[in-house]
Image (cartoon, rainbow, N blue to C red):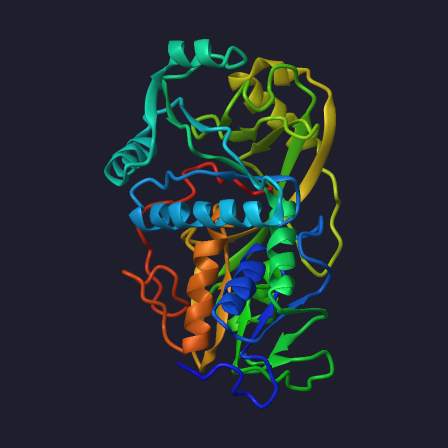
Length: 395
């Protein structure tokens, strides 16, 4: 392990990108005793970032993927601890209902792993689900896999809380941009090297442009930025305690209860186009996205068919070909790490991912993982689709 503070006055670690993964990586590296600088182009949790917006789903289910289930459990404890320390509720235990309207094979694999791990869950019939949540329709509903201890995270608030905890712990937050040298080390806008013992690039949708030969188009670890739109509807009877957070893979839509007056959130499993992170894109959802959101969500919750629209957002989403993250060091530099491709399910796992990245970067050692799914070179498929179709938590 490299000695802490042994970099001639430079920080032990530079983290580029103040989103959820970058903020948690910086915070946990600082808790390990390292000197850390977190560089963010705007401010942590800003509206136009991948980590912005009001909420993200938190669920333990990941199909057959036991590794990610374990990361979720570890991360939930960290999110709760951060909320207690910051004096605000960052995690809302609304429960998560997987509405099974198809064969439910993915949910069946999840149920096996939840049972083995001792995570609370129950399988509910369609009739029982409607009795429990009167706003829910039994149309094309076979059953529900329910996680009572899951729910949602207050997304932007959580990112800001992690960044604030980082600075309170003695970390340095700076506003600025960096670009990589050929070996992944950091340069400022003028091309001058930024001294640091190690660097973690957690720059979200900018990663394909920063590292086109590693995670750009037509590479095995390709990260593709796409646009996903969400809507908030002013629907009665759809608040926290009245309905759970819900996901309907067969219909292709998910939702989060109304909280803090924002409205009931709906996200269709629908790409609204690609986007260039260097060009400003619309801040509101496209008309087609809103129409799809109403049509699909209205199947499960009819009140959404004609509920007034409170607000909508056009959100960033970075997806890999396998739906598994990129968590690996630069092929030419064990001191430069690339972390991205959250693929619609990475927000909740930021504490677990951040701790692994912090330790690996500071120790200059590879991640100790059971397979190659997160690699840049020699990447493997991994066990199934961890997003579960649809890709929840996107915005």
